[in-house]
View 1 (cartoon, rainbow, N blue to C red):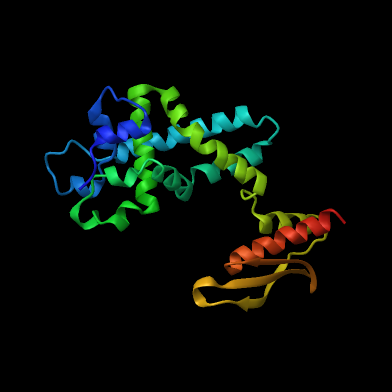
View 2: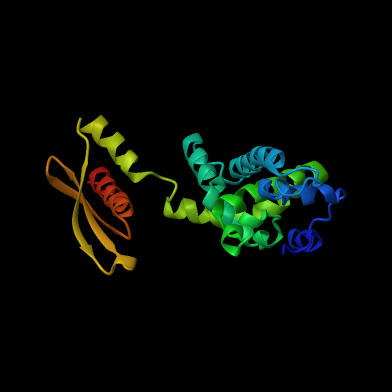
Length: 230
């Protein structure tokens, strides 16, 4: 059984003038399919909230990081509004506990799915925008995105190191890197991979990670640093 939206308002620190907007925002389409008396699901509010979140994050990044170029701003914004990140934000409000789901989706695992949490948060913020205006959405989002953006920028996790390396090597050397897995260790649930980034069979970077993809990204980053600082 979902928790009452009055508690969600307390968690959000926003008192809605139109309670029905917030109720609709937490109504999944699976619930609507089983209850003919419900006014509507949250899909339209999700659509609006998606656009509102994009704007608020873009505006905040533009004002907060005046030295970041357009391309970097775009990448950081994408990292902040991706499904996984928004789902993490949703969990700070225990949003899954308030979602009205159909019987087939009402187990705890469904309430904690990234996609459902992300879409519901967007719907809630869309409803908040309609009821309270852009300032309320900004006040809700900024405390969440501030530390997250700082971490993304500090760790350069918005940068696709493989693409960055390939662009550089093609422009400067006319060749494309190869990635070779040279090591694998640990049990199945905790694998560690070692990947080398090679150019014409010469190793320029070595990376480790819990997947081959992560190890390759680390190897590409090491190779890029090696090549551009030599």
